[in-house]
Image 1: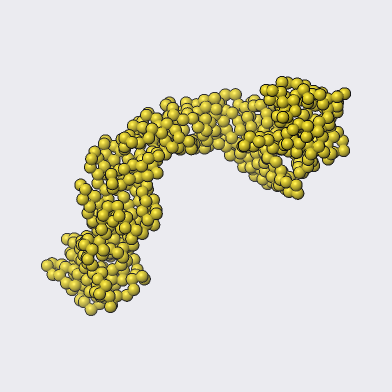
Image 2: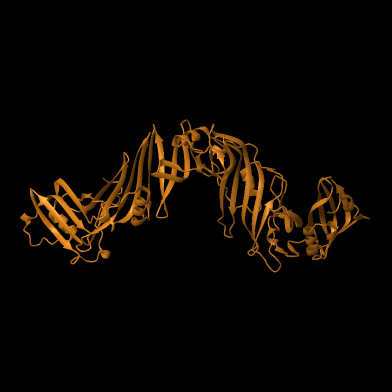
Length: 600
């Protein structure tokens, strides 16, 4: 049991207060007494006052590290049963150099504008509720036109032998009234700092301005103030958008960065407590001058009625709460977006497409109705495919894209989940982009996976789009091969070849055909395919209206046939086999449109 208040008061005898640290039965206090007071606190010319919740003893003392006496105020906090629970000693220092125990601070650079340097010995409570010893300093700083404000050490210096380069002071004072924000530049470290202005939307709210906190970062190596943070209360409330966002406790947090050169920088963020959609209250920050409010709530929050209604449209089994909330609100334009985590999957098409890691986003603007969307993902090849879904007039529109997914794992995924067989002739297809679209209305849903990539044919990498789609519960494969043929006469001509598949496991061949009455010059096509037409007369180089590939992947007869036609005349342009083909790993890629995933 710790020392009682009566026993503590009995240690004052003949104006001398004597207290060995061990007598308190508080290990943290005893540690401070041993390190800084040689184990015993002695106060002469002592005056004791009993304030029920604490006992204060003031007078004179001499530290082991000092040759002259100093003023001391010793506070002993008591519990309801009048037993001492913690201590707080403040000993005035006659110089700006503190040498006591592990504390070694040369603070001469604070001598102008600051005063009343003191050694602070306290017991503090950690996260586990246990007391620990804390040694720091306390100083006063003058604010012109106001009372002085007290700053104290916020963290303890390192262990013996260590000399940390940074020491942080934090405010310990009641709010101080300010005539205006310019009064802050009267602080000794802010004379040449230009504070950034606040937007008119904020200054119009000003009430009684007060300084509520001040923090300093001291650079002990270069002996200067490195940075300062000043928190000012501006106004009590701001109803920005009725029923959507109301702010209370509005303040401004100024950050001053104070390098040694004359150019000094300052920034400001507006802070507040926000009630959002009548369901959650959270601390927010607001950028200046943009007036963009952002916040995150990591605990579950109730969904407001419009959000619940939208989520129920997706599925009746959806939860009534969001697992978290993030908000972005443009206070000037009165536009907003609230995103809630949803701890439930969404089976868009039962047994076909299910999204997880759902995020519900509700957005809108003043005098406009809420609009909702859902974001989620499914996994292919250990990579997420992110989709976004919107809803309007009973119809869901869902889409998204993914990159870096390999075609072989995609083929395995299709076979495993939907018993869809990828045409075996596409084994050499290299996937660049996978895009997903889905339309859902009532009991009907259409779903498509579109694959954009390249395929090697005739020593070339041709751009290919493959689409597998679900329509009326039937799966279909569609493909197109793209060749962009430059032409001096009419600019580029994008040829879209329709691919015909055979999905049987034994299939080794696919065809790709193109037909257009506008035609394409054989000379232009030959140039892009690397064909030599030097031996043909110009009259024998026609405009082709039909071109096709026959590609056979059979290992014994790996071949490609390129044929063409015009005016009822058909002929073979190229015929290759495995024996005559060059290695495909060094094929050049033919030019085509940069993005063709949704073509066709």
